Length: 320
Ligand code: CDV
Image 1 (cartoon, rainbow, N blue to C red):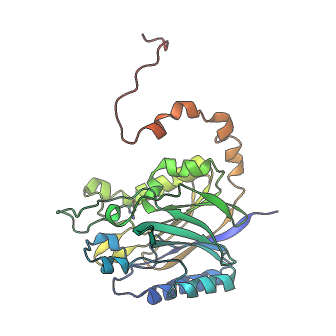
Image 2: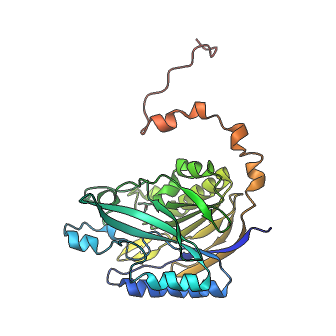
Image 3: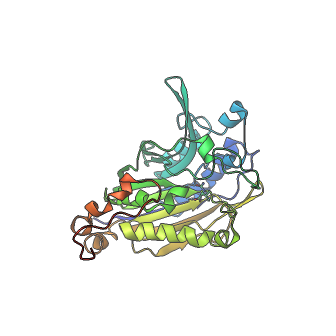
């Protein structure tokens, strides 16, 4: 039976700080309606898709900070999106800021869920790689306080059944880390969905900043190819509260090729028909992990966090 699916990256232009959840959800509903007209079965919305990208500001007032987070989804504001998607028979990935209280402690995560066409939440992910800082940086035009406002995700990189295949999720900065894709590749993932907010001035070094678009494509194309999986990367982009963010939402095949890409910095639906079986020949040849991987040689990957001393030479290698 064919496993061809019509999917979309629902790119969003900027969300103003003053925009209400209801206004944002109306934009998401417009993208959903367009998707329905195009026969789309699954949509990937951006990271933190319900509000402006609030980690750019230092907030000391807890109530102000909390106003950017969601409790259990769908709350009243997001409910119309869940209902419309269910009525249209469309599944989706949605990034949001998650807040809850556990054993008297406030927990905050940069999270994403995958919702099946039935309306059921079938997958949940919490961003593992948090960029930026925990304290405001004096010389930055825009802060990036994800390390202050979120805990590192505690769910690993789960893969689950959706769309008649195996689906996993990442969030923004995760896409730059090969380990993230590989953990899902080892679960035979067939589609990785991810949303991002990528300010174009983040590195603070112009020669790096000008390569932001290249590095975005490079990391997602490598993740797709090396794990023989489709990748859908969806931006929130444009000039948001003064901060210019990358667009370039794209859909990437297991070959590493970009099959569809955004052409604007606004709300835009990018669609493609993807064959979930396309990764199979790669998984049976170059990337037959069971035949070709050598985990004993990769021990440092889980034993070390930062780069450190060189390993001692192996005795008997013929150079002693
Ligand atoms: N939201 C993000 O995780 N953004 C990061 C950087 C640029 C801060 C990213 O990797 O795109």
